Every structure is written in structure tokens, then in C-alpha cells.
Length: 324
Length: 224
Image (cartoon, rainbow over all chains, first blue to last red):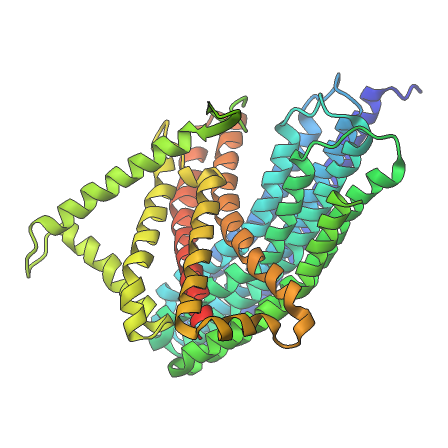
């Protein structure tokens, strides 16, 4: 058996494809299962509109599945494209593309199952609001997909850009770091965004008069929830496009990989935490519309404090890239 | 596929330095501005109690965003900032939607546009904060809860600009890259229009609204 560069690239493509689809399958399945279980609850409560609830469940599950479909697309590209004849750097590029999309699909998949399930329950509680609940669910789930879209974009940039002119020594680590940074950072934000959208559907069903306020605050809270994922994509862009000087030393390369890992893991907790803050704020705004301004302010301050740990990771990652 | 990441640039030498202009976003921004000007003219030319179709759309925008800014800020300040907020939303909406026309590119796809709008919002928010609270109160807010939190508060404020602009940029660029790659892979007539409906029309409108709301909230946080 000969182990030339082409063999290694082929191995990396297969492993990357496996990682992308393997990890990518986790989230969507959990989210869809949650939706279906809530739909059962809803139908048992109000069997009269079981047709509407069933339709809503299918639409919600289709959106929750999109993260897994992104992973499938990346896995298929990795499996069926011919990457032979390129430099050894391609090994880390293909692995990073798989890792980024695989991890990136987890959070959004789980997250967008929550609003879909809660919309089904809401329809059983308040059948007159069905149309608005479906719209709100669609908006909420679509915004939940943003972190996985970031991961997909980084995967596509990795797969379709030309890295041949770059020095191999530190760049391989930077590219692997890119995959970890954007993929792991997407987990928390995707999950958190789902939590926010879930209570917005609940609140809308309980208090139909505050529907438009709830949708607005939901979008705001989800936008703040995505901030950790945005730090992840920022570090990923810096690692991809900075252009590092060639070096043979291993610590210098490992610092770049560590920057990606630091930003990726550091963003998981803040994403979920910010989502939790937003979830509670949206829930109480629906019940107490008069205090919207106060509740929004408390929510934003609380979210800013949650976010500070993501900012610590961002600072350490930037120090690892630029100082060390 | 080669046009992924390709940028048309005009490089002008100036006193030994080089000024770089990204031509595409500049031209597209001007097209958006011209569309908005025509829209404004049509909406306000024949003002009537019984509004025409264009006037109705204009009034929809204005009512919605005057209400939102008066809710977020107080009544007086809200009315003062509402034109800015409305204009920001309409610009971003048309800028994100222009990508659905063939050979047109969203100016927001270039990081320079969202970043400059983000910096504009940042400057306006802090200027308003200083004017409403006074310089002393404004500075004190950085030393809360304890004085040594100052550097982190400062980084937190700067991170807001990064997050608001990268959110818009990432979503719009992401959508256009996905549409480009899928059209290249499948050559189908069905899939790209479906993707354009989702990524350009739906996500474009949501992101324009989110950017506007965040700018408004950043101002509101500085005032209160």
C-alpha cells in the first residue's frame, strides 16, 4: 500500500464527509422528534383540528431538517468530487469543511424543532391563531438556521477556494481551526435561538393581542443570541484570509488551531445562556405587554452579561492569532 | 465558479498611498438610492386622503417604524429618530432585494456596506447617549459594576459593531454563495428560484429588520 498525497487527500475527503453527515444528523433528528411529540400532545387536546396540526408539524419538521440537508450536500460534495493532484494542505481543508458543517448543523437542528412543536401546541390552545402561529414559527425557525448557514458558507469557501499558493506549515492548523471555530460556535447559538422562538409561539397562543410585539422582540432576542456564532465566523475569516508567514515551529501552528478551538467551545455556553434569557423575556412580554420596554431592557443587559464570556474567548483567540 | 470571491476594484494612487474602490457595491448602492428616490417621489407627489397604491406602501413603512421608535425611545426622541430608522430599513430592504434581479448584486454582500452602517449606528448611539445623559454619566457607565471592568465594557461596545455588521454580511453573502454553488452543481430551473425566494426575499427582509431594530435598541440602551 502506498501512502502518497493523493491517497491522503482521498482519505481526508471520506473522513470529512463522514464527520459532516454523522454529526449533522444529530441535531435535526432530536428537533424533529420534539416537534412530533408536541404535535401528539396538541392533537390529543384538540382532535378537531388534527389536520391543521399535522400540516404544521410537517412544515416545521421540514425547516428543522434543512440543517441536516446542508450537511448532506457538503458530505456529497466531499464524497464525489475529485480532489486529486493538489497539495497536502487539501487534507486539512477537507477535514475542516466536514467538521465545520457537521458541528454547525447540531444546534440549528435541535433549536428549530422547539418553535415547531410549540406552534402545534399553540394551535390546539388557540385554533383561531393558526395562520399567525405558522408564520411566526417559519420566521423563528428560519432565523434559527443562521448559525448553520454560517457553517455552510465556511464549508463552501473551504471547498471551492484555491489554497495552493499558501505556506503549508502554519496554514494547515489555521484551516483546521477555522472548521472548529465556526462549527462549534454555531451549536450554542442555534440551540438558543430555538428557545427564544419556542416561547414566542407559546406567548402568541396565550395572548393573541400581543402577537406583533412578541414577533419583534423574538427577532431582537434571536439576533443577540447569534452574536457568539458571529464571533466564531469572525475568527474563521481571520484564520482563512490573514496570510501567515511560513514557519516550521509547531507551537506557532498549534496556537492558530487553539484559537479556533477556544472561540468554538467558548461560544457554546453564551449562545445557550443568551437564548435562555431571551426565552424568559419573550414569555413574560407576551403576558405583560405594558412592561415591554422594561423587560426588553433587562433582557438586553442580562444578555450582555452572558455574552461577556464569549468576549473573553474572542480576546484570547485574537491574542493567540496576533500576539503569540 | 471562478467569480466566487472575485472583486472588481479601482485602485487610485494618492500621494504615495493607494485608495481602493470596490466598484460593484458603489454602483449597486447608487442604483438602490435612485430606486428609493423614485419611490419617494411617487409616494408623495399626489398626496391625498384616499391614498394611491404607492402612497399606501410608503405610509405602511412610516407608521410601522414611527410606532417602533416611539416605543423604544420616548415620544419626543422617538419622533426625532424615526426618519433615520425608516430610511435605514428601506435602504437595507431594497439593497438586500436587488440581488434577485439578474446581474445585480447586493451591496450588503460586501463587508464595507454593513460595517459602515454599523459604525454609523454606533456613532449616533454614543452621540445621543452623551447628549442625553451628559458626559459624566456617560463615562460612569463604563466603570460599572466595578472600575476594572472598564476594558471589557469597552471591548463589549466595540463587539456590538462587529456583531451587527457581520450578521447582515454573513447572511446575505451566505445566501448568495449558496445560490451560486447550488446553481453550479445542479443546473436546474426549479431549485435556484426557490432558494432565491427563501434567501433573498425572506432572509433579506428579516435581516434588514433585525439590523434596523438593533440600531434602534443600541440608541435606546445608551439613552436609558
